Length: 169
Image (cartoon, rainbow, N blue to C red; front, side, top):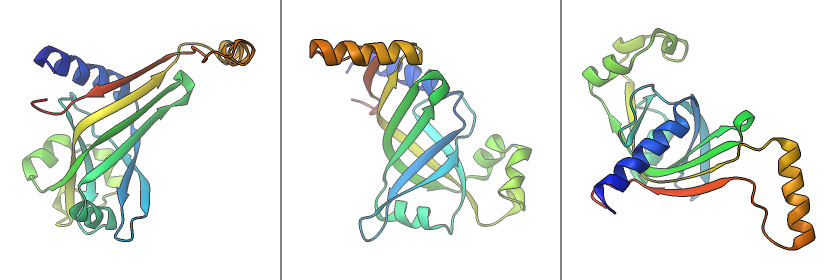
């Protein structure tokens, strides 16, 4: 993949998820069960990494230590936009980065704020992503399904694209 294509994929993904605050983070537990939970993506210019505040002592952090491979799902149903992100997660305890990303609203979930010794960041380095998006309204989508059923051809109701964000790919 060329540097320009890599940069374009980073830009595209950043544009798709920039207004979606909550992602579902999926990790794998010790018994192989997949577990998902909502996480607030921290606002910043997307450069291939996503950041989330967490407590270091949570089960999700233990699961990430066992297997760094995660998935994030973003959805904006009102705009018919769905994004799946694959990557690797790492616990980061960088006071400067936490200060940079901190917003007062986060006290709702982390009442002790930046002074909490258990507060940390989960950094997700994105490797791949895929999105599905349509600008069509519900009636147009249903018409596309009906046309597909009648003609036997796949419905063309929007865009589906795979993005490769692996560094040095």
